[in-house]
Image (cartoon, rainbow, N blue to C red; front, side, top):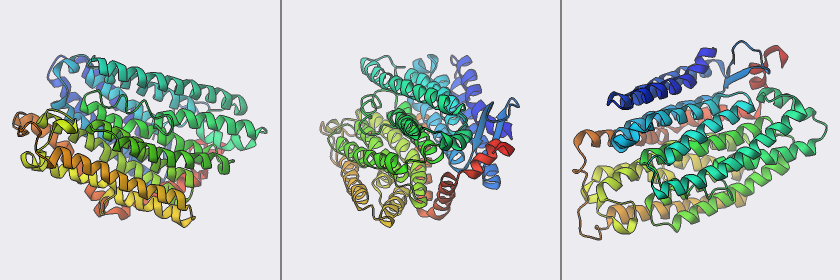
Length: 499
C-alpha cells in the first residue's frame, strides 16, 4: 500500500532527473511526456484502490503514525492526483511545440516535473510539516519556470510572485509552530483528535486565522491575490497553463482539508469570514477581468474569480456545498488550463494576445474557435457543460440554507464571466484583424501544430464528458464531501488502533 501511495510522488522526481540529464538531446523532451503518462497510470491505480477501500494510508519507513511520514488518499486526494496527472500530461505534450530549445536546455522539463511532484505531494501528505515541504518545492520550481526566459516582465512578475508567497510561508511556519506547541503533533489525523482537547480554544482560532491567511495567499483569494495577475501572463503558455490549473488549487485544497478536519470548533466565526472572502474574491476577480484587454490577463483575473466559488462551497459547510466545491475544483483545473493553452495557439496564429491587435481567428482557424468555445462556455456556466453543473450545485446548496446573498453574487458573477468570454470571442475570433492581416496556423509546421492542438482537444472532450454525463462525477463529489464532514474513517485509516 505504501508503494501505491508513493509511486505518484516518486515518478515525477525520477522524470525530472532523467529529463535534466538528457536535456541537451531531443529525447529529453519526450522523457517528460512518458513520465507524465506513467504518473497518470499510477494515479489511476491509486484511484481504483481508493474506490475499493474508501481511504488508503501508508507509513513511510515503517514508522507508525503519528511519529513518521504519513501518506494518505481519500476521495478528494485521489481525484486531485488524477486531475494533476491529466493536466501534467496534456501540458507536457503541448510544451513540445511551445517551449524553446534554449529553455529546454536550461532545465524546463526538470523544473516542470519537480513542480508536478510538489503538487502531488501536497495532495497526499498526511502531516502539516510535509505539506510545508511540498509548498516550498512548488514555490522554488514555479519561480524557476516563471523567470526561465529572463525577460524584464518575467523577472518583475517573478519577484512579486515569490515575495508574497514567502510571506505566506512565514505565516504557515508560525502557525505550524504554535499548533505543535499546543498539541505536540503535526499529523493531520492526530490533530483532528487533539485540537478539540486544547484548553485555550481562543488561541486555536487565532492559529486557524493564520492558516487561513497563509493558504489564502496560495489560493489567491481577496485581498491577497494581486501577485497572480501580475505574474501569470509573463512565462511560456505551457507554464501559465499549469500554474492556472494547479497552483492555486493546492491552496484551496489545503483550506478545505484544514477547515473540515482540524479547525471545526468555531465554524460560526471562521466560515463566516470564509463566506465574505468568497464573495469578495468572486466580485473583484470578475471586475478585474472585465477591465483587461489581454487574453492572458483576462484569464488570470478569472482564476481569482472562480476560486471564490470553491471557497463558497467550503464556507457554506453543508454536504451539498462541499460536493459542489470538489466538483468545481476538478472542472476548473481542466477548463482553465485549456483556455491558457488555447491562448498560446491564438498568439501563434495572430501574433499577439492583446485583443486590440488581433482578430479574424474564426475565419482562419475554425477548429481553434470551436475548441475555445467549449471551455469558455463551460467557465461561464452554459449548460450542459461541466461549469453549469458546478455552479448549479453551489447555488442550489446556498439556496437550500437560504443564503440568498452569496447565491445572488454567484449568479451575477456568472453573468459577468459571460461578458469577458464574449469579449474575447468578439475581439479575437469574430472581428477582422485591425491590420488587415489574415491570421493563420500555417506558419506552424504540421508536427508542432498537432502537439499544440491534441491536448487542447483532449481537455475539451473531457469537459464535455463531465458536462454530458455529470451524475457519476457529482456522486463521487458527494462521497468526497461525506468523507470530509465525517473524518472518523480518515482518522482510523491513518492512526489505526491509536485512533
